[in-house]
Length: 161
Image (cartoon, rainbow, N blue to C red):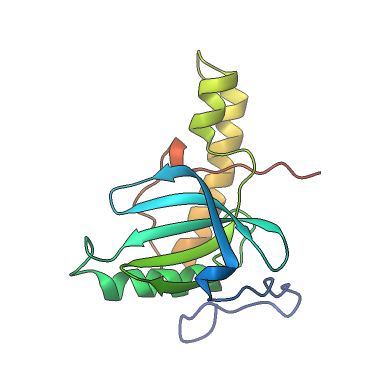
């Protein structure tokens, strides 16, 4: 973190892949999640044939919080922690703010639990999820950020091969 409290990127941090702010470069596929003011889609970034997630925030429903939403999107693009999703870019399409992010291949912890662990996760799995979530929260707190929506459905998984 910089002396003024800003998020500071390490010299070894990899630059995020370059994505355009042209909505025609993205093909929205199926809906993979939703919240009070947003829907998340699996999408295809056509120039590279790459799967991404597109979070579409309804700006009409956020009429009083637009500045906060823009700030959050900007912060998401500056995040540099392996346990926190980093936004590639964001832009306005009609009445929505599109936030382009990596697509988490395995979905949420809740989705995995419902499919593979209907009786619930075992303690070691819960401990591992909590440990990694707490690492992310500690990082965000050091950056002066607060996550107000921690739950199984917002904890996303990716398989590293």
